[in-house]
Amino acid sequence: MRRYGKNPDEDDIRSRPNPKGNRPRTSIRPKHEDAAEGMVLTVDRGRLTCLVDGRAVTAMKARELGRKAAVVGDRVSLVGDLSGKKDTLARIVRIEPRGSVLRRTADDDDPYERVVVANADQLAIVTALADPEPRPRLIDRCLVAAFDGGLEPLLVLTKSDLAPPEKLLELYGALDIPHVVTSQEELYDGHTAADRVREYLAGRTTAFVGHSGVGKTTLVNALVPEERRRLTGGVNAVTGRGRHTTTSALALPLERAEGWVIDTPGVRSFGLHHVDPSRVINAFPDLVPGTEECPRACSHDEPDCALDAWVAVGHADPARLDSLRRLLATRERREGD
Image 1 (tube, rainbow, N blue to C red):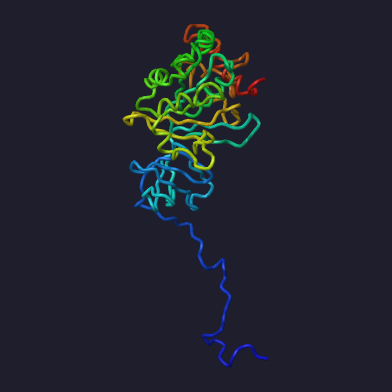
Image 2: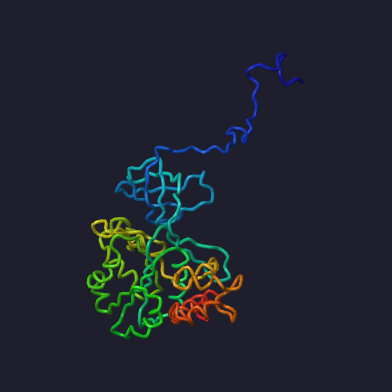
């Protein structure tokens, strides 16, 4: 039996479309010249909250960006519905080059690098002087990540009424790192501690890191009490909890637009697999000239290192070299060893 009539080109012939041929592939990407600029405030399961012209806009990453992910602090370009109204969704079509990056790995032997925050100027390392006990090696690791990523460090020491700060500060005296010391009463009062820390935050974007129990989130809440409530939508009607419980980073504006505070999840470890030890020396500009006579691939902690002679003739403080070598050593061992 013949399937078609005499004319095989008749219009009623049904053909199956080629699903792969409907949309020709092309390397040309739209320019989106009308895209609006924004800043990523937080990321939650593929949805990103961005600040666009003073409005919190929910967005998703455009497919054309491929595997490139946006993180808190990124400057982005968005198209679509930018009204910020409920159930609207915009698209992020561009991620601007980053000025700084705070990165970490889960452990020193974990090759998977996680970008925590982008475009921060400063890293506030919050640690308690007691209850829980301070962990200098974790502080060292945060310092290495800050120096490597282009952030200036700030030490925030809490609970000074339980232990004096001098011993811990002595470890970092040669690094000349700014620091703030607060007591337990000031921490729970909130405003007193916040006022002392705020002096170091004006006009800057500061990421806060610290492990559980040191008072990091309590301090951040005191710095920006109203903004967290406004941007996170208050309390979840089902669970009774705030919708943001520091399970992901969250950027919050300081009063009078004097700067930004980025609260990050509590850390138990800070892997440095991604850090090239040769870059840590850049945080010690007074020692850099002394490396010119070092042997190739010098670790700066070996008998032939030229830094020993550089320091011996008075070009730099010996304590600075000790600090450099302590930070380099922490890159080679796991936290808690």
